[in-house]
Image (tube, rainbow, N blue to C red):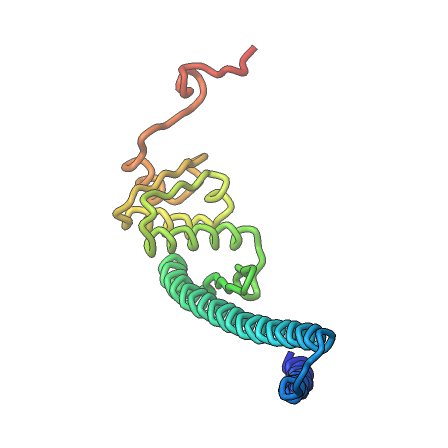
Length: 223
């Protein structure tokens, strides 16, 4: 763009020289007595060409100025977005490390989120296990719950059943510490620690089971 600008500036300079030459010729012609109609017509044509060249030059310079301003604005916008994403990344990662350390007593690596211009990366370094993936989601959700005005959090049983029993107990305790409302569904509570079972029993709102204790009093898929 810089090279193109220099090239066009040279063309503008040449055009301006031509304009100056034409205007000088016009001045000399005007000074000649008894001008013919043909000369006056020629003068009018040359004047129109001169005005057209000046208008085109002005339009070009205005276009270059607007494009430069637009590019500068876009660059500032992109930098501001990058800075904001970086600050958001630090805040979320700090909170996730805090929650992960609580769940695993500072023995396990926390999940890390990295924002790029148009994408993100979410992982635990050196650990791609299924249980870790679900645990990461819970840790992230709890972090967002604490950092934002989000009023509620919902975790289905399919999420929690993939996580180790000891970690589930600490997650349940973390749920209890929240001042916001958290809904979870849980399968086979007796498969977990005694402390986990106590938390579930103390906080349950609805418990379903076969043989008449279904949500609507019976199983709809029975023959």
